[in-house]
Length: 142
Image 1: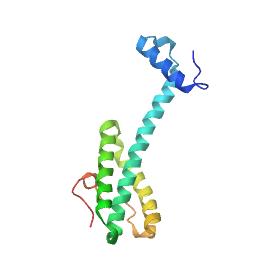
Image 2: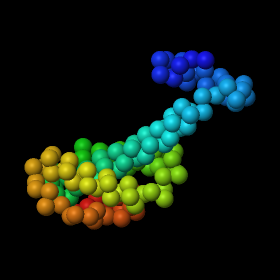
Image 3: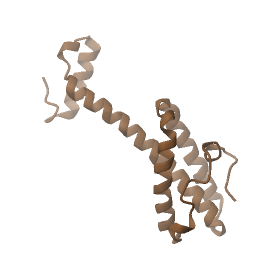
Image 4: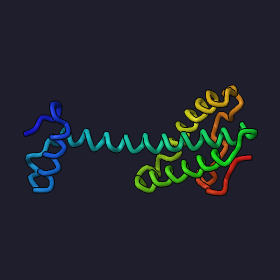
């Protein structure tokens, strides 16, 4: 048996082969459980990251309106697509969207403050948009 700690890639290939062969009693169950849970957390972080970037662009669009342009518009469109794609691939995260939005918005405000040089107090303390607005292709905050 290949060691999880010494050759992770080799271990993954061995575990996949054991699963394909139906040799379930030979699986490294403890480490498999850990890896499956890690994959789930990774997908959640990816969704949070996509939403944070989308919210950042929406905040910059609203609070730095003099810098609005085609590039920013396309960035918002791109981030919406990436967010929707990630959520579509992970529908089990939908029940957590409220908590994910709260966390993503906090990070977006920090990043927006850094990038715009505006005080964090300029931005609302809670996200001013609904999920429907955030993901609506035609919504650009004025």
